[in-house]
Amino acid sequence: MLAAYAVSKKGRQPERSPDRLIPVSNPIERLNKEVKRRADVLGITEAQIMSVLRQAEGGIPVPELCREHGISSATFYKWRARYGG
Image (tube, rainbow, N blue to C red; front, side):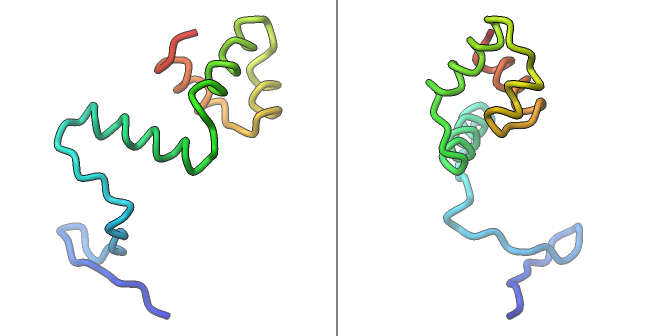
């Protein structure tokens, strides 16, 4: 089966599904929607994110937390920058 392609300045790119597009012009709002969409895909709530951050504040090493929760260290540090901690 062939994928649908759109022609752009960068060449032929796979078309994104319309349901995955985030039609928002404000960059902050777009970022918030993207973060929420990714959290929905992963099945992680803001309360769970805060719980992970609190565990790190409690002294549990970040690599151990990341392994335990199945996230990358980059994701952990993005959460910490976004939600504090």
